[in-house]
Structures are given as C-alpha cells and as structure tokens.
Amino acid sequence: MLKNKNFKALAQQYTNKYNLNLQGFNVLVPAIDQEPLLLGILAGIAGAGNIYIFDSKININQTYVSEEFGFSVKFVGSVSAELLSGLNIILKDSQMPLQGEKIACFAKKSSVISMFPENMEFANPKNLDPELIQKKDLSIIGLDTEDPKLGLYQQFSHMIIKKCYSLAIDIFKSKILLIGHGNFLNCTLSLLKSAGAVVYTYNTNTNSDQSYVLKHLKDLDAIIAMDYPLTGSQLIGSKGIISICDIVDYCPLVKVIHVCGKIETGSLKLGNIKYLPESIEQELINLKMKELGERGITELATLSLKIAEDFLKSGKNTLTSGKSVVTYKLLNNASSLLSGGKI
Image (cartoon, rainbow, N blue to C red; front, side, top):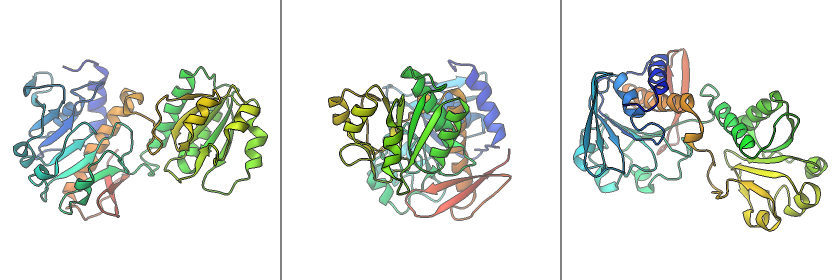
C-alpha cells in the first residue's frame, strides 16, 4: 500500500491533468525511496498492461495486488532479457541496471527509455551507460529542462529556498549573490526578491565586470553557485569569478550553496568558509529528486511517463502538439521533439 495517502490523490490528479494513457503498454519503473509504489500506481491508473517495479533491495520477485486500485504490480530485483523483451516503456533511474548485451531484447520499434534521474539531469544524464547512448536502434528520451512550460526552474528555485533555510539563512533582508545564467537565474532571482531578499547577480554568459562582484561582496549572507546548464566557467577559486581571498577579506561569514558549476572546495575549506553540500560533484546539478516534495515528484514522474507515451504514439519521428506542449530530447540524437498533453 501507499505509505502516504497524499500520493494517491496526486497520482490521480496528475494522470488526469496530463491525460496519461498507457493502455497497450507494458512498463518497468523504479521504486523510489519516498514511496516505492508510486510510479507503479501512476502506470496502473493510466491503464498500463503489465507493470513491473525494480527494487535493488529485494532478492525474490514479489507480486502486489492493489484492491484499492484494481490492478497488480510485480516487484523485481533484477532486469532479465526475458523481462526486457516484453516491455514498451522503461522509466529509468541510476539504480536500474541496463546492460548492453541484454538491451537488444528491448530495442524494438515499440519501445522507449524515459529518464527519471535522482539528480534532476533529465536532458543530460551523467549516469547513463555510454554503450546505451551509442545504440542506434534504441530510443532514450529526457525532459527538456529549458522548456518554460515545464516549470522545472521554478521547482529548482524553491529547492534553493529550502537549502537557504537549512543553513539558517533568514531570507528576508538577507544579502545574496547568485552566479548563473538564463531562465534558472531569472526564476531564482524573482523568487528570492519576492521573499524579501536583497539579491545581486553575476551572469556567466556575459563578460560582466568583476568589480561589480567585489563591490557587493561586503556583508553577503550567501553566495549561490548555480551555473546551469554548465558554461565551463570557474565560479569560485583561483581562476574564478570570485577568489577565496576576496571572500575571506570581504565576507568571511558568508555561506556558499553549490547547485551547479565549478568551485574549488579545497580552497573553501582552507579559508574556513561554510558550504553546502559537503560532498560536491562539479559536473552535476546538486539537487535531488527527494528534495522536491510530494507534488513535484508526482508531476515529474507523470510527465516522464507522458513523454514516453507520446513518443511511441507519434511513431518516434512526428511532432505532436496540444493545448499544453512539453519539449523533450532524444538523448541519442541531436533533435528535440514536442510532446502535447491536455490540461
């Protein structure tokens, strides 16, 4: 059963909102920590045929029959060639093993892998086996984070607010410097200002004057490194937009929140500058799916299944559109496709 009944209402709400219809499709989804059954319940509500949930923690396959919803799901602890041969849609996270020699059983005309990464890298997953990307007969898709209709950057911005509070940064009237670019920077700037913060920005896509940064370093409460998508610029460090020496001289009590981008963590430690998270992956976005909350997780899961549905129904090469359009990327192809769902 669902541990959290809120997920039931949200699953039904977003399935209806995006008109998710998986009739005729067999689906494999991962178990997620927050609610192991959630993704299987979404697929079942949408009418999927055979529903499998991968859980690396189990040794013996188990079938769960939901009297509440009227369908059954099967928990599996491994992904066999036999299982792959009968699937149409795989919703993949980093824990789900897909090996090259087995995936040939799945790489057929009526099949697609839709990415559902824990680190929110839908369109540029770093944990995807390079062998899978190179398979020309395999279709791998991911949500396009740059699509404003998806609203993913608004979600990211709210997650940054949560990180501020976890570091005891009282946003109202706090002085915060954002280092980033594009829609993500604009969304976060807008949200922080609406919460009463004093916000300065450095755009990594322009040749901004570093004297502007030095001018506003004094008395900063937080520096948020959020260079997403990555531009390759070093944000904080010996060759960065901000040097550690300047931080020590002008705002030694500042707290650094790393979301994405290159920073010298060793120098931050030497300067005794507090930063979050403690373990930083320079090439990844440091936002986790579990930080989103019930509504965000359910909506993104529904959309990840929706683009798989539309991708298959479009014949893989046709652009489809509706009242609401969400873009997605074919990750082993340079093109972008459109997916429509009625709201």
